[in-house]
Image 1 (spheres, one colour):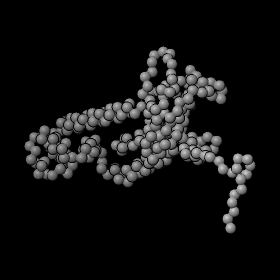
Image 2 (cartoon, helix red, strand yellow):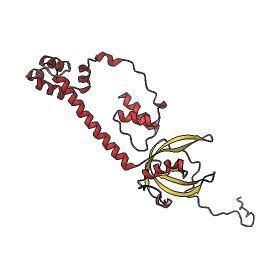
Image 3 (spheres, one colour):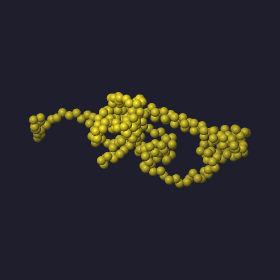
Image 4 (cartoon, one colour):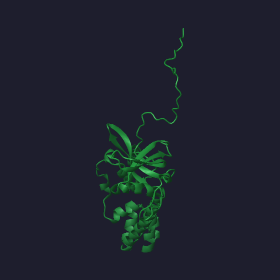
Length: 266
């Protein structure tokens, strides 16, 4: 037989609540780069009574969309570098000399942040390590692509110069050693034709190895395996870029390690 709950106290046992947007046991998001927007910017005071701006960021993309990140920017003269870094990443113009800043102007602006982990009172929490202006980051990537293209052109010029120093007979021997079909080698009557043939047909790494006098048998030397888990997020990103692997926004340390290990297997 069911029994009815009795009302307790003057107000009874019922209470009106709204729990939407309330986070329970907030977990630290993985380390990585995230696109964020400024939700709140409040001028307040630190525990020591110093002026500071309290910022709340929200992740706007990816599987962790909606996650919150926080930053306190002290307004003490020796600590203004942090606030300046935030403003530059948000794309704000910073005047020369003294100026008035309305914290409301920060709300709604976007940037990217590099997130790491720290332990506070025995618990792991996310911490913003760096603020990134997306437009400047894109420009840097374009410049990097351009410089890589220039390096490729320089490499090709260097190879052509090295080949140009060789005799016709040496070029023929080199072409055959590179497994270029003998018929094609014999068809190249002049040194210039042999150089063009080698540049077109040969694998660049094999060509460089032979020109530098390297022995192919040395490729089987045992190399020490890299322990990626001991590398920082920045080091992992640099390793991926050196290998020509695409680093996507929001990739965690675990994602980068997995990508590097897959590349090792290939």
